[in-house]
Length: 330
Image 1 (cartoon, rainbow, N blue to C red):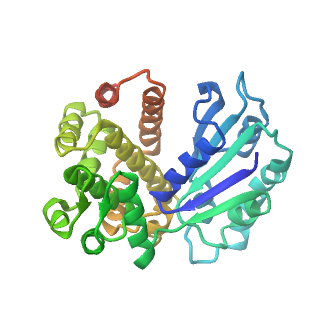
Image 2: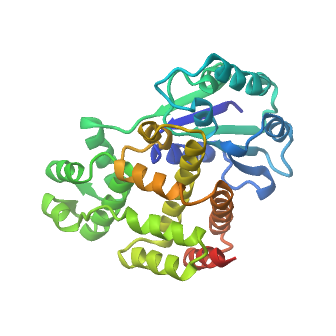
């Protein structure tokens, strides 16, 4: 299987990752054959051993590495790295990259990252042995087409005026757009979404509840986290969506904490996180400064285990959400 590199918008990259895994027929692999690593914890030798291992009672071994290429870009995209820094990255990872063509065909290796510059040393090395996809958020007419397609995928349709209205109100943050379009599709129950519906239903972004809930989970305050997440459910958000939002925030939090530790300037954090929302960048940076990387990673791994249990039918989504937040006291 070819190695893949996905980088860009924080909404599009996970979507493309999920589609890619499904295309490979790797959605239902045994847990022993599924590996998800944060780039800050990845070591070339250990990763290479994992990639060379044959799958256990399955056709494939899936390995997803998140945030590794962005680390190679620190201290900041848009500035030239020192020759010694770039040389260090190249020296450390070049043997691994050179070994990729010899990996078993049963290994599916995917790197997922935020926005990367063309001069990123890891990206330059991987281009020779990987299929690279840069996923940028749409704008202008392309954004209008994205909205139309997203609404149709939800079993509804939208008028041109409503399409313009919602992008004017929400902007180009795809996470928020998708959330509001979901609400509108449910509200309109199959009829075409009109401009008046947008004015009535589209609220201001309620990211603050997610930030506060994640804080409470990491700090061991499960009752507070449950109250905040139940507020989101009362607003019409289902448990799988809430879990996905918490997963996204923990992933961004890990990237932000790593960027802060490496001295990345705040002005360049937006590209690393792969979001166009100034609010999300500011709140994530503030939140990252309050927590250590081990705290964030432990919570993120707990969430991945919960998500896997839901997908395998071992846990109902509502119960999984309660258990996930309840574990915050552990």
